[in-house]
Length: 416
Ligand SMILES: *[C@@H]1O[C@H](CO)[C@@H](O)[C@H](O)[C@H]1NC(C)=O
Ligand SMILES: *[C@@H]1O[C@H](CO)[C@@H](O)[C@H](O)[C@H]1NC(C)=O
Ligand SMILES: *[C@@H]1O[C@H](CO)[C@@H](O)[C@H](O)[C@H]1NC(C)=O
Image (cartoon, rainbow, N blue to C red):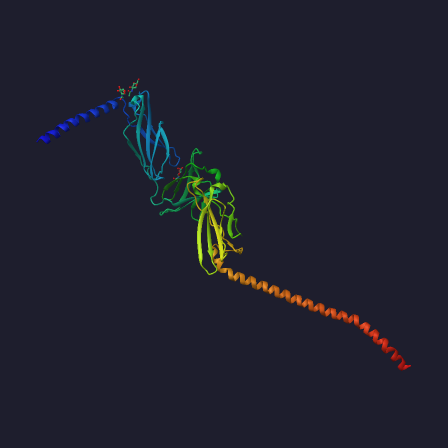
């Protein structure tokens, strides 16, 4: 009984204090209420997803002096897949949205200054949602959209047709970036026999480190096709050209691969490399390993010089110059010892070809040497024979002379 009474007293005591606190809060709110921003709207200026969120100041704080009014804005970034927060003094904010997905925005007002005795007041958060209406024949949206900025020479964006392709369908690509007034159509379509399958952009039509927005829509006999929207940053789609100058040298037990950065517009300090080394020992055992480097040379000790070593290299834009990129194609393999000119892609196959190549070369050398020796012998024989003949030529007159000298008088005396 006493316990229950005590509890009741406590509740009675607690309630007034709570109410008091509430009252004090509402006093502050009554004087300075951080009401949420009014008239929130998202305007599409036709920039393919680059939208402007606008709002107006709540009327309750219009006459406030000595107060800093800020707005906190949170929106769901559909490309990054997470919520993003910003605080601003302004009454608008531009952000990138995927027009194929709902636009979700949350906003609140922040007050700080003399009007709040220096403490910051956060208002209540309000939600705003807008779902862009989906138009076009369902299932006709393109698939597997992909952009590759090859060696910064041209960017090819390609796609696959949608699952549904009504009669006489034709695709269009429109693009926009911050240096353009309005979207423009693809400068140069990549065409397959039936339809447009991509678009080629030359560097002067692109900007880096900024949104590059794309819309691929289409028309058909049955009506417009479902549009697809994309937003990318061009510098993250670079694929360097293949490394063409890969050389291997061997000195003082050190085997070293050395290459030149691919020629083009990508600065050398923006490239990283992957070097693949394949090694086969004379007894047929094989190893293969890769290492990544920002140098254009890599080497290791190879003291026993047993078997054969092959290298190939590929390159990619590094983390200092972009967040992402594509690996180039592999260079052709260069091997130690020796590299036939027309080597296949993998060094291992060539390693197997080695005895055949060496055998043939040896046989060829042997044949040449034999032919040479044979010719030499022939020449010597001929020379010897000639000499003997010459000797004969020299001796004969002498012999004739001597014989005639001796025989002639005898002969003459015989017939006299
Ligand atoms: C702000 O001040 C103007 C004139 O000074 C007045 O007409 C208006 O009603 C005031 N607004 C608020 C919300 O108090
Ligand atoms: C601000 O502080 C002063 C005294 O430090 C107090 O008199 C006044 O009521 C406070 N104002 C608010 C809005 O809390
Ligand atoms: C495709 O999109 C562009 C840019 O928004 C627009 O101007 C054009 O009319 C659209 N075409 C079709 C067939 O929907």
